Image 1 (cartoon, one colour):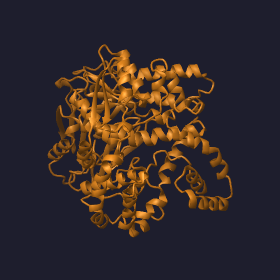
Image 2 (cartoon, rainbow, N blue to C red):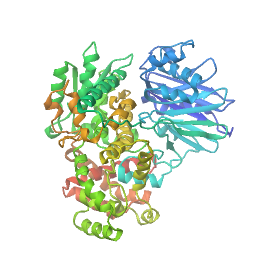
Image 3 (tube, rainbow, N blue to C red):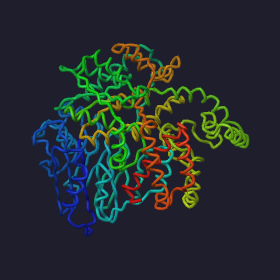
Image 4 (tube, helix red, strand yellow):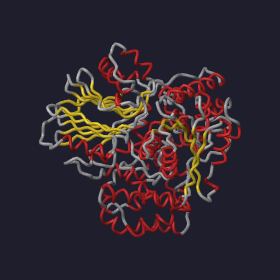
Length: 632
């Protein structure tokens, strides 16, 4: 796990000191790799590569990057190739100078070119300079776990693990991408290629890019979900495959030359990961849990302790205090230069900090399971409404508009109102990660000028792109639950859960790995028939049945809590005071919001309306983010 940075001045424009620029880019992401740093350059070709190293595999100086081959090719690599020992046989004719996965990848590229990607199982973002072709090759892992941003301006191509590195470069301005901002208000996150910055983009998961003297030569998808037909498989067969596939994924993610631990909430997913790790370890697994001072409603420590005793782990806990939250909230914008307004970032930050304090550099998590196995209770609500949605969608347009308009008068925010509105507008019912403001609500607090500018915009265009993607996959299943799980994986897992895990882990210089996001496991999980995922109204049914082999019923079938935080109890006053005191200048400086609309939202919070707390958090975060990154 590392930080990578690079500049390719392919047009030979007057850039200045490229080496100095990359050193400055490296300094921005030192937290991603505090163990070592390096820089390689070929000024005649206009290429400068920088690297910050967090040593995980081959801790010796032989693993130093940038790594250069005898052919003069150079690589900078962020992430891990879990199966690197297996694929090393494919390039065994080479003389290896290290035991690192980075060197395996470099030789694999030299032998197979872009086809090297099909052999990789891991999380990665990397860049390889091809000396012979005078060409830069970049790629991102299938799930999108590792970040990779780029910009192409005035004949200069630059890339980095974090946007803040790119913003240090001359000519790169922090300008707002207004459409990305508009969509952020709906989703509280951004799908690729958008970043909130104009002319700064992120590479899609499962894509590679080639850049030469003409600019971006290729940008291609190298992987898509491969659905299997499992409808003839019985429940017991799928249970066994689920267990075996997860066990393989966990074993891959224990590959490291440093201690490997796990986050443990006591829920199904983290408990399963810990259980399997314990079976494979010759030493007690270090586990980490989080609690909140005098807030029993948010506390899962009792359940985590039970799992720890069951598997005899070396268990550590962090109790977050109101002071901890107060000190952390202003720092969120610094960590997330690509914005994400998610209060669950608070406990993840502190549990990551605890792991680092205990010298655990690699940590496994339960991220991603709920999306691919339909693990949320609200999935059942959507499935209940979907038959009505499909029938209603076939009604005449004038009738749909009439009913939707009438229904929204009484209950605009309910699933029913959402269903009628989306059917009337020819939209898909399930939007997955749309956790923030509906289209009509956004318009209430946008400034007059921005509302006019965005009049024809609708955030459904984001969902529509994923629907087209889903429909284009050969042999994809037709069920509503299959669409929901697809969108959950492609949209929510990648852009919310994996992104926040990377940033919060890296902020504390630790590597977070997600076994449920292994691409082979994902292929299988998304192929499991929906009837086995939501059976007897039990979310994630097939996974829970498979895990009965190692977990007790009171862990498997207790009510899900998730990473909830006492935001209303502890953060309300902090956020209210900040928003109140900065609102007027914020509205003037950004010209995006109208003050009356924001004040209405603030008053709902002051009146104790619980559902408004998350809305306040979004506005609070945006104010801090604009101040940090847009000087607003």
